[in-house]
Length: 215
Ligand code: PRP
Ligand code: URA
Image 1 (tube, rainbow, N blue to C red):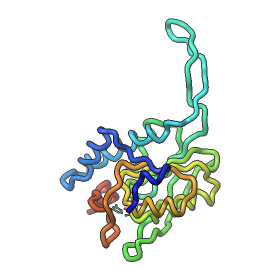
Image 2: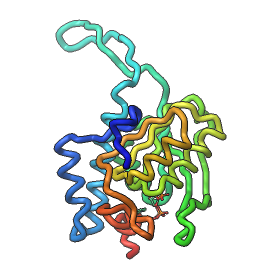
Image 3: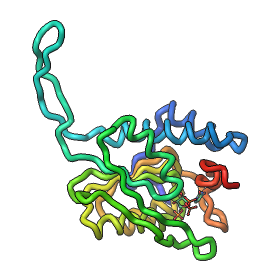
Image 4: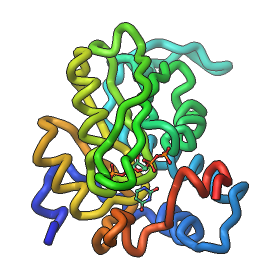
């Protein structure tokens, strides 16, 4: 049984606002419009935490009162990489906080029989190796999709990788920690287990279908 306390690179975001919004997200009665809004808000709150250690430099600003020394972001630029398609729901919230971030896309779907990820698209910023990366996907289930996305990015030179998921199964955390070196995982909750179809229990159902109303 996974105990995230054994994983220093896994952060469970216990903030009350996050937990409250996550409960509404889980509710089967929550419709697509509200579901999309909540995913966006949760992504924004997660990005706030995931950027906590970004570098700052001093600058000088003249306020209406006097000149003063203040701080501005000075570290690497950011790339947000949604795993298609459900990861798309998390992009806009992050771009509201970090409007200069570039967005790359990794297209993966889970084969319903094997549960293994199948790649169908990959388009990344050219300077991906120079950027701090936020991979976003609402669900970390078996971990196959996230591990494949990390591998695509590594193959193309990516170094600093953070994975932001709304919900994680213990199995998915184990898989990403086992297969991916040097990445940090942020999640709002670690659920109980996966069912026979690879769905997170209790979970929130199929994130892509709930976001885009396809079921
Ligand atoms: C979902 C989810 C993840 C993946 C997680 O996508 O958004 O990408 O499953 O499962 P895993 O950890 O077992 O790989 P899905 O394959 O349903 O595609 P979609 O986003 O297009 O709905
Ligand atoms: N993908 C989803 O959308 N939900 C799950 O529970 C597992 C994978």
